[in-house]
Amino acid sequence: MRIGDAPCMGCEDRYLGCHSKCSKYQEFRTKRDKENEEKVKAAEARYYFKPFSKSKRQDVERKGR
Image (cartoon, rainbow, N blue to C red; front, side, top):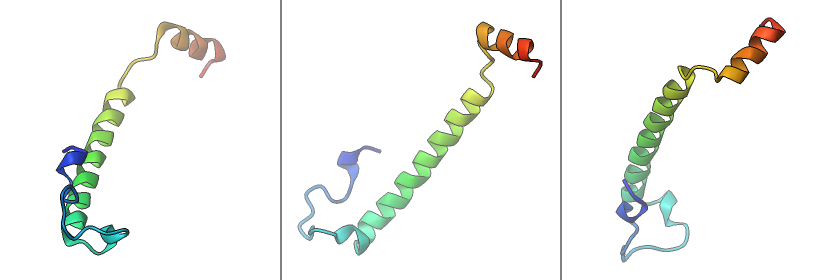
């Protein structure tokens, strides 16, 4: 989903502060938040299992942690 997919683009009823009242935007935002949350979880899982670099591993071994 891109910014250009937002229902605000070309909306005739758009005005300053309308996001809080627009049901189309709120639905869009809910979907966007869910997608972003899934991306963050995937990234966290990817980096959680990433092994230490050699220098980091040596530092940990030296400090006894």
